Image (cartoon, rainbow, N blue to C red; front, side, top):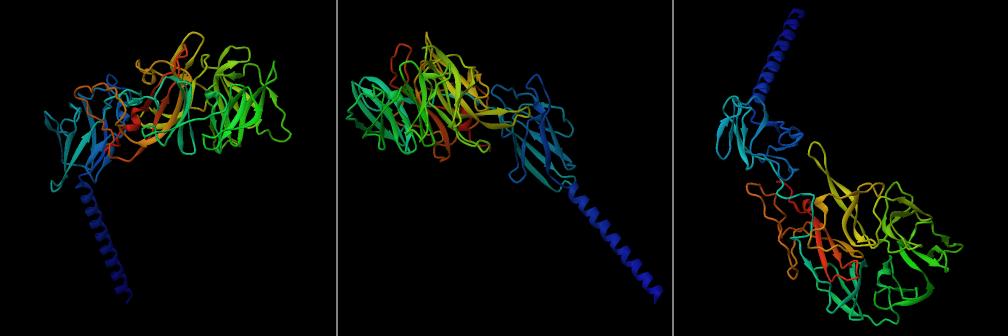
Length: 485
């Protein structure tokens, strides 16, 4: 019995071993008979582009697509490049371009034209299976990070008549455009600038300082020519507070930040003034007029929202380019990088960072556009990717085009709208033609409902005080690119 049991156990072990070997062979056979492309890259060529071999390519095995979702920069010459393909021991990889067909396994250093999509046919080791792939090397046909105004449209401010002043803000889900035309004041409202405007003639009992207009959570605020503060909840009916101020800085939470003046000194004040609050003298160099709109932001690492302003004129009448910040209790000068100006346009938007592997990351960015200095109106653009800690002047891809005159005191509204959507009643300026042989990175279809942030720049004025009766619509090109594939 013991001898029989021993033989039985040995037999079971032998059967298990043979089964395992067979399964192992079958698994190896399956693996070797694969038609997968396991890796794809471009060969390094610094004469074309640095780090070309690190460009990331997506391999979609189900659809048979290989592509770089982050397109190469405009102007990259891909007409003569070598490629690197890895497979699971394929017996043949046939590459087909517009003008040649060859077996990659025999000529893996061959340079080919990748301007147009190419095809790869992978044959398994047993030659029983094949799979076709389309390989696309995407190259931008335009400067992807260019802030584009041409080709995106422009229009006049709503209403008719000679424009003497304008100020545009967002309040309660609407855009409010306040204008003085032919000595008459108007308010025009719309959800989006391309919609039909609802224009109301204002019957005001005071002469407003339109540039002082600010929007709070539940009210609008406006100074008259005597400095008296008026408030409104509907934008049409205004009530006097009988409080006099030298300037309105902006709104932070429920606070209206203001300046008062006693004839020789300026003080920080708040409306309505909290119990026990005492106005504080402004620091030397603080702007008392002509500063930008106040940009507010919050984040998980802040205990309270912050408010920022840039530029303006100080109490002695000199210009400044400094950025000042308010933390809910105190003002402090945070940066003094920008050249001096008043009427700068200051707003939050986005830019994009492309790393050494050509992977693109969207970055929150603060923008400053234009303004007016002692001699001229400005057209420069400054950006900060670190909440105003440092600033740099934007490159040529961000500069205002020549057909947009330099200006200060323009209003900017960021409006999320369907991508690539034209406004029928607006004018367009054609964009530059696409260079020959560049593969077009498609824009979103006009039927696509994806929303992207468009920049609308309202009005503005020249150094000589000429008011521009214009609305310009801009966007960074990359925001309109359709995802690939």
